[in-house]
Image (cartoon, rainbow, N blue to C red; front, side, top):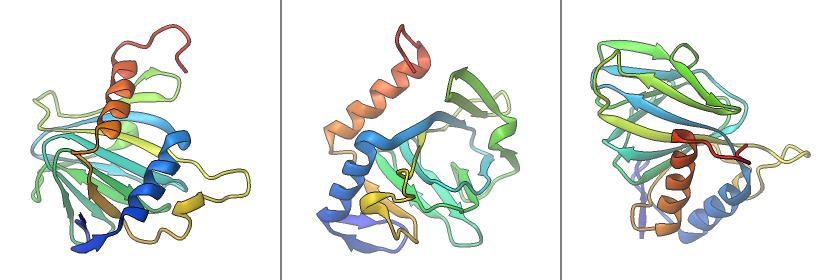
Length: 177
């Protein structure tokens, strides 16, 4: 049994299956977000599905004017296309940073978003996008209209996949894309 943190509803295993199916081949534009306690990272709307996997800390994700979604370490949040997002380590923040202004390219398509203001990171998030197929379909995620948050801390394949991507960001090797 899993919980949708945004709505407090029970989410069936078919949603998790759809998520894993979609992510197995379609995650692109990987980023590692480092966020300080008093900073929120602003993601302008993008016309792709965005995926955030909380590595450390607790994510407070606000979509537009909605109440924040609270997602603990190990959770994954899927955000529908075209949504303004605010990612923070707490409900109250002192400053905002636009994602494009704090992007440090690591290599083609991979970046580190450093929203720490030179301080310590209390929230680490692995981010990516799910691209539509040539027909504009997201497959099992077509029709996604609300963010979905799922605690996947007990699903080893998710942790392993994101660990491999983080290793690639830290030290890209030969043949890396």
